[in-house]
Image 1 (spheres, rainbow, N blue to C red):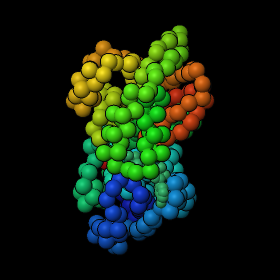
Image 2 (tube, helix red, strand yellow):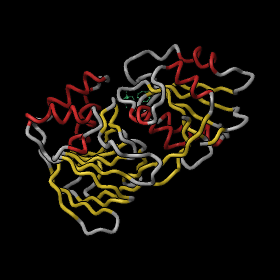
Image 3 (cartoon, rainbow, N blue to C red):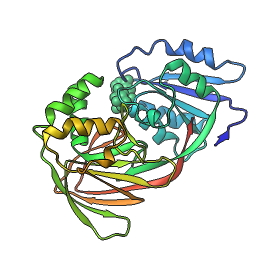
Image 4 (tube, rainbow, N blue to C red):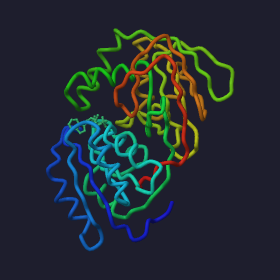
Length: 296
Ligand SMILES: Nc1ncnc2c1ncn2[C@@H]1O[C@H](COP(=O)(O)OP(=O)(O)OP(=O)(O)O)[C@@H](O)[C@H]1O
């Protein structure tokens, strides 16, 4: 961990659509913690999806020391993608529905506390994941969680209540799939799985610890393969998910690797940091060590 000295230029990108709370309070709060004497501050409210990525790229080109994402994991992903492999650090003020990376990094969840922490400008370098070259920083996945991410996006409403509703009601319709998995240089294995999560960090968000032992600085990805389970064990699995013991259930296998090839029956849903997407039957997932500077 190092301290960035003479930190001057910091930008804040606010996603007004993230989570459920209003974002109008942020400019005043930011000016409270980032005095003009010490910081050159710029604030940008996103106007459309991917605006955060494009604006953050401009901040990188303009030599900003940090770009702070004020939003959920989708906003964090957009800005992290833009600043990775540069000298610009990512800051996070979590205000989404899941806040997976912020929770994994144990960052303050409350806005004032998060801004105060960011103003200290402490930097750590973390790994990133690539799913068919699409960067993710927390988790990406296929199977049920990807299906849910896509359903949640289609629901048009945000928030944990809508999300949990999707998780519970879609369970009954979802059919597990068979995947061929090749970890690093090992012989391929086949698994029929309810979901497969590629974890750089431990969290899906909301403290649901899908890969309790995952580290964002170890240069490895934890791959969680969950097989289909009878509905009566769902409460026990949920309990283990929220008590960081999911790896102890017999429906879960965890593999550590740097690279994974997945072959699946057809083009299908994926998610990266909870963002919905569609990809082909061949997937290549890998970890790229220490490519993102984060304010911790
Ligand atoms: N102004 C905007 N209008 C519409 N969509 C936007 C806008 N700005 C950003 N987005 C998109 O909003 C989506 C959701 O944002 P984000 O993930 O930050 O919030 P969330 O879904 O509420 O939180 P979480 O991911 O933690 O559950 C992202 O896909 C992002 O690209």
